[in-house]
Image 1 (spheres, rainbow, N blue to C red):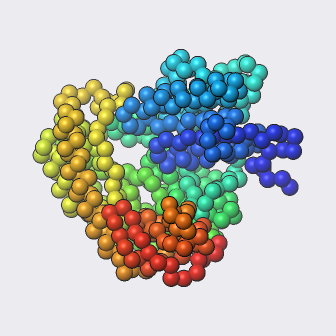
Image 2 (cartoon, rainbow, N blue to C red):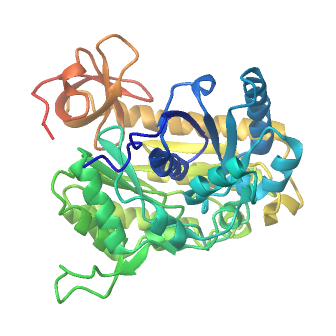
Image 3 (cartoon, one colour):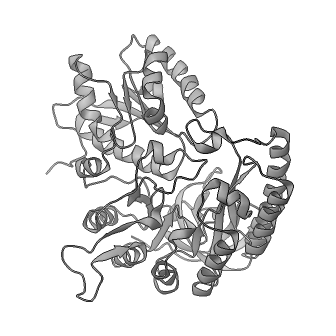
Length: 464
């Protein structure tokens, strides 16, 4: 039987180039676009000038995201014209959702615009394009329809794979566009998630990363068959993680991105009891000031966040913690910023993502008074990143002399070097590592920087 993802014998192979911006959700969506287009004969190529179809899968979180897309579209327009106009250009993702009509108006070279909940319709849109009939803009919110339409079989490119379990967000943080570009929270069913996880395991995936805009808000009915009679009829993320851990071949599980308000006790306990669940938690806090947290509509206080961290650390004392921070939110005072630094000192992070606040059109914060000057934002961001960098450096330095199991995902920059990740999400480089690519191997850590580790292989790779 032919592979469901391979083109039929009468189909000409066509080049597909997808450029992905932004978060893990977009990475997952790009992979699934590739799966959806494979039966039409599309196969990945390394550069847009080799492609019959170029897709820009966009992100709308950061400042000037739309202009960056138009800049890239200008370059693609030149490529398209140089090739006689045969190349097709599609814009997908959150900028497509928010600015679809503007994209079509400003850049006639764009053939299709498709939102993040409608990319399963790409084959239909391509057919309409060939017939020169129908709409070239698809931005409906239909996550259930999307997931039902996606092929179950996937062709992962390495030993680690994202698996989307939840999309959208109902939190409506005042700075965030996600509820407007991704829609309301939607949780996939247990049966669908487990079927996809098993497919990934059959293709050699060793690590599954459960993802969602608010992944720990996931909830779903118990599986149709195979559950214990005493199990609850509706599951939360902790129960799902236990179920995924039973799948043969899956040796690591992670999840991202979480909200502090959804760290329930079952999920915290899973960190203590599920061996495959990595000792790593990315839990965004955004600010250490209760006044700013209220203005952000974060629905938690700094103290509540610290209590959650204490609960997680009691369950898994060696856990590594990561977070997100925004500096210069409207009205942020020097005292508010010092509260953020105090929270960072109290927690101790292994890594963090920190950004200057930038207004996103259509969000409540964009119209707030007391916008902070850029020079002040710059100074605060530098101080925050210095503190977080010191903590990351200390965390990594403490790994020297330890032996840890590393999942090697790709070649390093130097000849013969391999790059992998520790259970604590530290990048690890080893020399003479070609034999361990795609597998797990024990490594003795010999060096550390603020951002990565170096080590020496000390055992054979664990084969899939």
